[in-house]
Length: 359
Image 1 (cartoon, rainbow, N blue to C red):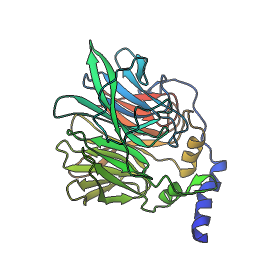
Image 2: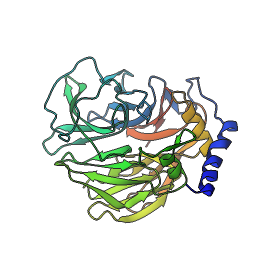
Image 3: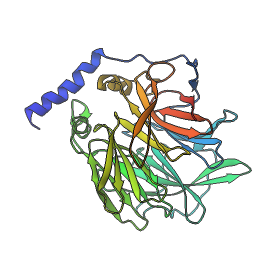
Image 4: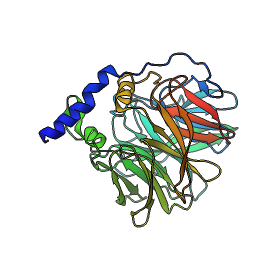
């Protein structure tokens, strides 16, 4: 690594010491923003078919050394209950992944990005990025009996060596597109991955890749950029939307050719979701890098770092800020999931989800 690059890396690391953000402990509303303080690092959220229940990814850490879990959240009653790992287990054929899947996750399970899709045969499939003990895409079947949802593990996909994923979007045939952030095998400098440091400096460390049942994998070349994050698919599965977090942009890609067909500037965008009007929603952290580093160093505490929620037209790529938030009752938003008349906003750190009116 060149000396100039090393100095730049140090410049990123050293200023953070004096620019910490305070953790938030109170659970009081702020105007029409209501905190729901029943969670643990709710990094990603998807709405279930009953349009009442949310499935929440309670993130461990990206290194996989701290486990997490999936929980069901009934927005009508406020009940939160385990989804995975859960108290009961049902064995089925592990037929939704790759033959080299090493079996069901162990107690190190550490979920990250989520995607839910109804397959061609009518079954509901959930895919989950897992960093715990291994880097895999875990496949589950979402089942419902007497109005109660449950998850059944159906296999996993083992990506190429060195892959470190963030988010994914399922297709109806069981395939998916996923974001790779940077090579997890990269050496460390001053205790930090040089892969991450290069991503923060704007090097093209990541990309979106496609996996199809049967194992065929390819990279969408137009997606290459620094720190790939949230991904989404158009309803007809012909178009991929990818957030380039450090590159501060959302890109639109033609899935067949892998070429970029458009881009819009979004400040450090994270996860993506669709609203009922066919618009994309993304959360973007607008706080300084130093503030974000402070949040990361206090993982598990509710962070105050500023963020914004953007709404994007997928055709014109025009964007608008529909919410700006900093401090109490929560900062560091990572996802905005619409359900009914509300948005539910999660974060990679802390004990809460925000509920905000959405029309």
